[in-house]
Amino acid sequence: MTATFTPDQVLATPPGDLARQPAETLFRLKNDAADLLASARVLVEHIDRALELKYADRAQAARLAAGKDTGVVHFDDGPVRVTADLPKRVSWDQKRLAEIVRRIEASGDDPAEYIEISYRVPESRFKAWPESIRQAFAPARTLKTGKPGFRLALMQE
Image (cartoon, rainbow, N blue to C red; front, side):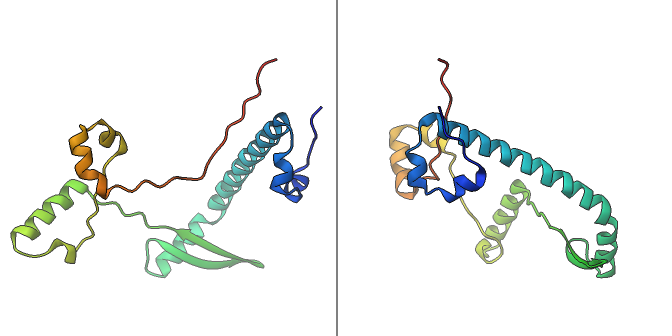
């Protein structure tokens, strides 16, 4: 028999005590938490759609009145202060930027005065290279790890 926990009980239980629970209990807790998270995300998205329907026009009018297309505006709806943010998402055409960099270099200027240049090597390409090429690049490569993750699956009996 596995122990049942409410979300509040799980949060009140030290991780070391949870770790001593049977694997099946941990499996169920993890799945229950994932289900709660998925439900909460759907709920938040649904409410966000309602807020957009309610306030998008008013926020756009406030932005226009402030002389801007994007960004944060504030307005009141009864006793509630609404902060509406329309973030700016800028993207740059990499091929065109590369051409501009070449023209700047050709004119004798330093492109670094105008733009930030970064390099990256896809890990799949790095691994596919011959060892001699990998050795040349290896000193520039730093490997960092992410947060460890564990997936649990209940085995069929």
